[in-house]
Structure formats: structure tokens, C-alpha cells
Length: 323
Image (cartoon, rainbow, N blue to C red):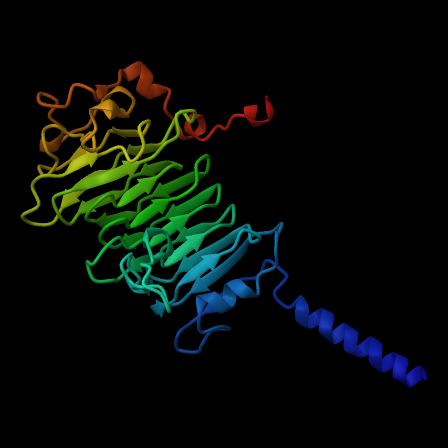
């Protein structure tokens, strides 16, 4: 009987050890060539413990990872670190007009993501997220719903709707990133700060389509960014309001000649001109000329600009519980 008891204890110990093998702050290595602990990023995400109170790094070696990924809401404090931003690529190819399996219903925009982040305190560094679908409809590369997300030195590649910042009240920070697309390729209701990013338009269309709620003071802030375009692209608007109170500010940015003189578009609804919060400050380049800007956008003052900092933009209100 004693030997049976000891055997059970031993087996239980092995089970606990097996369950907790990755329950530590050590780095997990992913490599397509089999030299890491996992060959897919999805497998590495699966072994991370829920609600971690430590920082966990998933180091991804060079390679093309064709995966449709979700970082679920119960995962916090994960960093996905690419070995080489140009050659460490997560890619998928869904688009909005693909038919859902067994139905005639199209997939729609919000299911097309390559990477969807639902968890909080997630960081991506030095990695490319791509939606490689044909230009047959909306096709999201990055879909965010978590709060306090950081993207450092990353690339986001796609056509229409490349980056969807999908949840109001969440805070996102992009630094030294490259984002490209065709129409509304940065869109959604989140509060997002873009610092030192390159924003490339691939067709005559719109860069942003913010849907900032009325009660949220800041939406998209682009600071020290450079807006560029493909050859023969010559009429791009800085933004159009997906929802009436869209907030978008470009400050200290370089705007190339493809930015049209009007700067902003009302999405075919003049009522949006009374509510949209479209702002600029201290921009340079041929696309920054203010002489023909739409009269319902505004140049903010130096004093106003001095108050718009990441600390101020990312401060949240605690008034949600007040009836």
C-alpha cells in the first residue's frame, strides 16, 4: 500500500512539473527550422500561464509564419520579439469577401485579422504582421482589443484596413513602426499614439478612419511621423470620420506631396464637420500647406500642443461608476 501511495505522489509531482514547465519568466524560442522549443508562435502562446505577474518573452527566429493568431484576454505581460523585422513575418490572407464555411455569408472585416490581441500589457518588437490577401476587400493585419499595448520597431503590411484599433478606451503606443495600406488603413475607436512612424499610402484614398467616442478626449496622435506614398499616388486625405466625433492629430510630422490640399474628408456627410476633431500642428513638407485646408479642421496653438503628451493622452478617467 505504501509503495502505491509513493507512486501516486511521484506521478502527481511529474504532472505538476509538466504543467508548470513554462510558468516562469524564461524566454521561449520559436523557430520554423526546428531549432527552437516550438515551430509555431501559436504553440508558444498556448503554454503561457493565464494572468502572469511576470514578463514573458516569446523570441521568434527569422522565418515566415503563416498563422492566424489570437492572444486571448487571460494572457498578460507577453512580449513577442522578432529576430529581424524584415525577415520575421507573421502572415495570413483572409479578406472580408471570403465566404464563411458552409454558408453564403461573407467573412466581414472583423474576422479577417492575422493577429488579434485581446490581452493587456502585450508588447510586440521587431516583427512584421502582414495580411497578404489579394485586394478583394477589407483585410486586417493587426486587430487590437487589449489595453496598454506597445509596438516597437514593427511593420504592419496590408491594403484596406491594415490596423484596426478595435476597442474604445484602450491605449496603444506605436514607436518607430512602418504601417502601409490603401484605404482607412489605421481605423477604430482606441486611443493611440504614433511616435516616429512611417505611414505609407499605396493608393489614392484615406490614411485614417477614427471612430473616437464623444466622451473620450483623444483618439489618434501622430508625432514626428513621416507620411509617404507609392509612385503615382497623389491624392490622399489624412482622415475621414468613421464616427462623428473622430479625433486625429498630426503634429511635428512630415507630409509628402501626396496629401491633398484639403487634408480631411467628411465621409460624404456635412454633419460630421460639426463634430469631427481634426487637428494639425507644426507639420512640414508639401502636404502640410494650410492655405487650402478644409475650414472645419484646425491648427492648434503651441500652448495647446505642449499639453499633448503621452502621459496626458493615456490618462484615464475613473468616472465610469458615477450614475
